[in-house]
Image 1 (cartoon, one colour):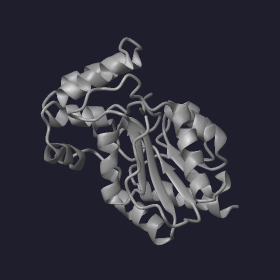
Image 2 (cartoon, helix red, strand yellow):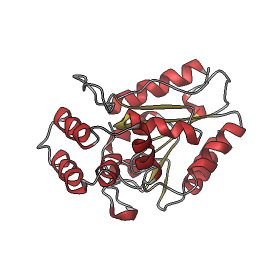
Image 3 (spheres, one colour):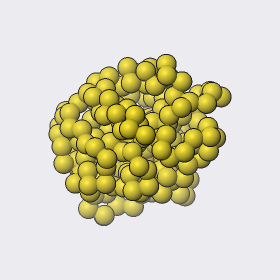
Image 4 (cartoon, one colour):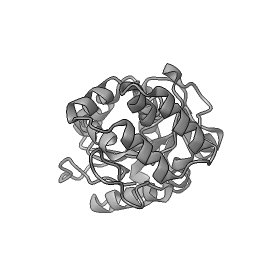
Length: 238
């Protein structure tokens, strides 16, 4: 699942993980929908690695990432170990982990521009809901992540699946009376394949070869504003 492009900060790009409840007001009807993956797309690495690093257990984070990629750990085991890493963390602790993570440049600028145009930005990631939710503070209208929350028992089927990305996107488009031609997705890895195969507009960001092959355009770099500019260009072609 590591991207074919650059992976700044020395962090491995992780898979994505189930949907979280929307948080922000979505009452307005935007003319466009922008769907962002998080790990490897907004985040220049993996939320799990960032959390493990922040809580002083980077080797444990690297170990479960490697085992997941090798298929030697189940999703439930993966999440339980992550929750053990974060055990006892306060909201302030989680805020600090989020703020210190290795993000792409220009995320707030991109979300601000989307809102200023009366459009919608959502984030759909396989990473934990509690981490993705904090992107609403930066301007994301809705965030969806795996059903994993610190201090709460892990549900039996916590993981957000690739097909959930398509289902969620269709739901948001339907609520705003938009078609798939008014939507552009940004992603990098295998969890984005279903979404990229369905949507006519998709920007691969530091992507794996399979994602790049399905994308309408690709971007390699560290500035989200540049990838977003490519996405706007795809939408203007309609």
